[in-house]
Amino acid sequence: MGRDVNQAVARADAAATNEKLKSPAAIQKTKAVRHASQLGQARRAKVTEDAGIGSTITANLYHATTGVEQTTGDEAGITVYCNISGGTALNEASRLLGNGDGIEVKLFPYDNAGTVEYRWYCPEGFDVVTEECECVPI
Image (cartoon, helix red, strand yellow):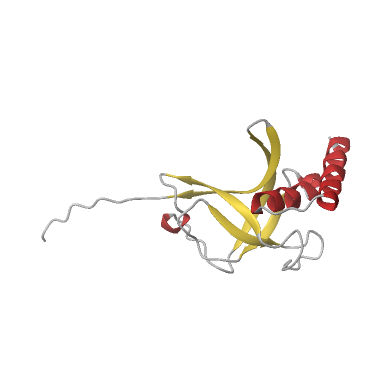
């Protein structure tokens, strides 16, 4: 696997050097591929926004060896995909994520119409609980 990872990183570096990356998706892909040697390894990250209506949130990785939050470069402003049970919006889930919260993230490949790409995922599950209460007068 190490050789494949190194080849993927080399291809991403060559692509970034030889073409102008314009779309956010292309930029995110390049950021992730450069971290391909970390596939499946847990990393700490700091959320940089409050939870919104979707299933993703933006975060900065902490440096793998120094523990310092990365506010610039490939490890800043990463998109983190979250699994939400019972809903689709992080702002309706428990634990409610907010700017400055710490989360664990892992990098995994996924198939995007036959092309292998990489995404950061939060392994923590989030639940949307809707409680229906029948109020009874006392």
